[in-house]
Length: 625
Ligand SMILES: Nc1ncnc2c1ncn2[C@@H]1O[C@H](COP(=O)(O)OP(=O)(O)O)[C@@H](O)[C@H]1O
Ligand SMILES: C=C(OP(=O)(O)O)C(=O)O
Image (cartoon, rainbow, N blue to C red; front, side, top):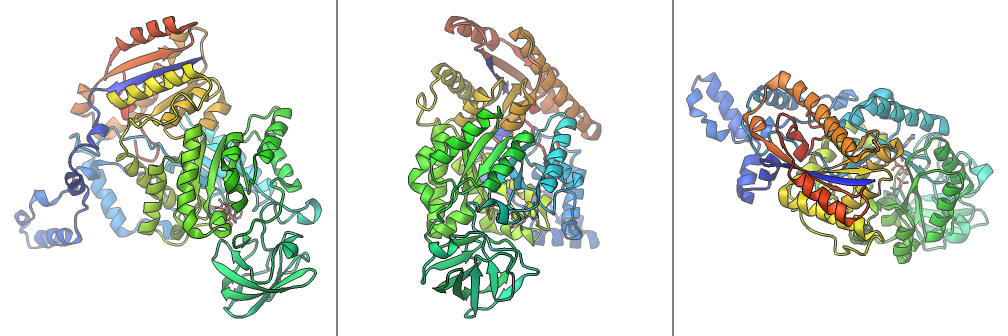
C-alpha cells in the first residue's frame, strides 16, 4: 500500500518567513545591539524610559520563537549570564500572540542530524537529551569502545524509541578494524597508530618511527595496525595523522619499521588515523574484525552500516548478500574516503543505499582543495539516484572545546544543507566534546534557518529515470507539486519505506509524514531528508487507515498544542486557520480508481479545531514546540 496525502495551511506563517526583501528580513533578524541594550539600561537607571523607543527593539517578534532547551552536560555547558538573560526575555515574550515570521507554527527541520556517541554522551541521560535536542541517528564508531559499550548504547536508544510517542532515533554502526583484536583477526581498511600509555609531544625536526611490531608505544616509536604498511610507503612519502593535524616525512625503511622526520609536530594520542598523502592502503574493505562487528549489528537489528574505505561495488554486493543470507534488513551506507573510490563512485553508490562524504580521510588521501568539489559531486550523484547522503567530519570541530562555533563551521553546515544532504554528522563534537548538546543545537538552528531560504519546487532532473516504478514516481511527483504550490505537508503510507524515500528524493517543501506499520522502517526513515516517520497499525480498509492517521496526527498535535496553551493561550491565527487534505491512494487496483480517489480527497476541508495548524509547517523537536 502506498497512499499519499497532502495537507495545507491556508495561512502558513512559515511561508511568510520567505516573504519580504532580504533587507527587511535582515532587519527583523538583527539582535538588539549591545549599544541599544546599554542605552536601555542607562535610560532605566536615569528614569528616562521614553528615550528608548520601542522601535529600537527590532527583535521582539523574532524572540517569540522558542529555542530548544539545551541542558548543560558539564559545568562548561552551563548557559552564560547573557544566554540566561535572553532566555528570560523569550519566556516573557511568550505572552505575545501576534503572528510573525518566527511565531508558530514552527517548522520541522528537514536535514537530519547524525550524532556519534562516545564518552561524553553514552549515558541514558545524554541519549535522552541528545534526542530531545534534535539527534535523528545515533552512530557508533567500532574503532573505539568494545561490543559491551556499544551494546549499552544500542539498548538505550531502543529504550528511548520504545517510550517516545512521536520521535524515533535510528542506529548506525560504523565498521572498521579495531586495534584491540588486531593480533587475532587481521587488519582493517583503516590504518591507525596504536595505543600509547599517554599522549606524546612531538617537535618539528625530530625523528619518529612507526613499526608493524605489536604493542610498541614509546616516546619515539609507535605500532601501526597494518602489516603491509612498510611495503606501501616509500621514502619521500608524507604521512598524515588525523588528516593532517600532524605530518611526518618518510626518510627510510627497515623490514618492520618506517623512520620519519616530524614535519608538523603536536600531541600524538592513541589510535590516530594514518594516511599517506595521495595513496590508498592496499587493504580489503571488510576484514575479519568487521565481519565480527557486522554480526554484532545483525544480532542487534541496527538500521545502518557505514562501511569504511569502500573502493569498489564488489564489497557492497558481498555485504548485501551476507545480510540477505541471514535475513537482516540493514541498509548499507558507503563511506567515500579513499582516493581509489573516486573512479568507481557511480557503481559504488548504485550498489549501496546511500553514501557518507567522509571528509577526514578523503582530505588526507586527496588534496584538501578537492574535498568541497567531491562533496558537491557525491551529493549530486546520490540525489540523482535517490540515495541517502550524509556530510561528515569537522562540521563543528571547534565546539569540541569551545561553546560557540566558528563562522566558517556555520557556513559549512549551511552549504551541506543547500547542496541537499539528507543528513549532517557530528563526530568528536558529541563523542568526546565538552558541549555535545550545544553542538546539536547549533546544527539544528543553522539547518533550519538555511532550509527556510531554499525555494521549493525544484524538481530532480532525472524525473522518471531514477526508479523503475513509474507509477510511484508519478504519485511522488504530483504530491510534491501540490506540496510546493499549495504550501502543504504530505502524508504517506508505506510498508517498505520506498514511497517515503521516493518523496524525500523529490524534496517537497512540506514535511513528509510517513506512516508505517513496521518499526524497523520507522527507525530507518529517520535518516531521510524531510521525513517524519510515524508508526501505526494499518487496517485492511484504506479509508480507516487514512482516518486513523489523521486522528493520530491530531492527537499528537492537540496534545502538543494543549501543553503549549497552558503556558501561553491560543492565538487568533490558530483559530482562523483552515486546512485542506488531499489524498492520492494507490491501494486501489488501477489508475482509474486512483483518479477517483484524488477527486474524493480534494474536497476534504478540515477546520483548525479538528486539524491543528502545526501540522502544516510541521513541528520540530528541539524547538520547544
Ligand atoms: N565509543 C567511543 N569510545 C571512546 N572514544 C570515542 C568513541 N567514539 C568516538 N570516540 C572519540 O571521538 C573521536 C571522534 O570520533 P570519530 O570521528 O568517530 O572517530 P575517528 O576519527 O577516530 O574515526 C575519536 O577519535 C575518539 O577519540
Ligand atoms: C567520517 C570519517 O571516518 P571516521 O569517523 O572513521 O574518521 C572521516 O574520515 O571523515
